[in-house]
Image 1 (cartoon, rainbow, N blue to C red):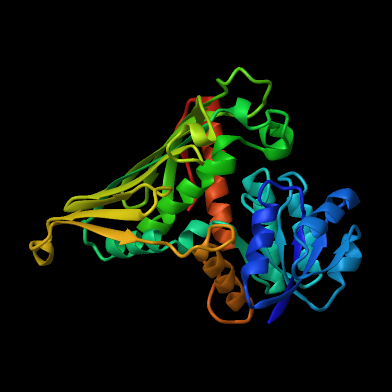
Image 2: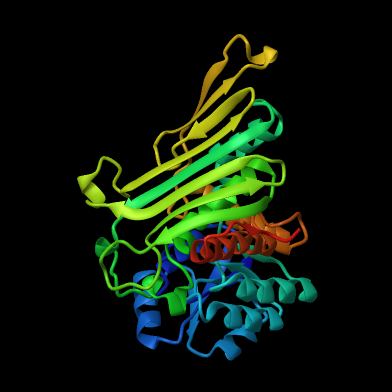
Length: 356
């Protein structure tokens, strides 16, 4: 049993992270911190289960030796400095993505965590989704042969339905738009499923919504991996309707596809039940060369559902010396470097090579 703190209660995912902490039997108490006392009081009143303390004084909160780890749900511009303060106080951190505005911001936090010998995780919770885990297993076992191409798509509701005045759409605060907020999950999934790293990036990003925002709301990204495989991501705030007007209430159009010389795996990550489709020409698959794996995912109030609980549990165990986080600070840094390269490519019209 451990105690945790949630740093930031006004982030778009703060309530989701709090629900995860409340759902986990391993969490015996939760502290909340935010600079806004009214927001703290409201969060405690509405979500008081397990909350044992609130504070607007970060230094005092971080002195609390009972706190084993913190979840940071912060604005991208102030997240790195607050994370550095938590690390200096000896706290493991599970950070909301992308941690900072740029890869340089993220790297400061990653290096500090490594020097302190503390765990730094990032909330790429899809890594514990059983569908993604099965896809990774099949791809890395060579069921579809050598990987040739990857494709993903995240199209969601337009900016007008998402509060255009939010800091998410302010480049000075957020650092980026659709790529930094949602596309990052899909870029991370390329790396996770393939086990490969990006070698070069070419991209076009644009702001087409007509709203008064300073970040991209549509992006097309092309990647080449070290193995030679290529990948593409199309991301955008483009759907004209929202919510219940669509058959899928979150109003997302999503897709993952991984293609090899001898087959493919593909799925829609928001469909329920979740169905992973597989095609393979391998002789040991000849009896059923086209197969489906159907998943009734465990329900939970946690952010990400049942596998969201699993994600945080794995992080806690990593902090206790049992294995590694499901998504580390180094994973956050790798994705941030891809996104930075995408912005540079769009700005300069050049393909950008990544170091290493």
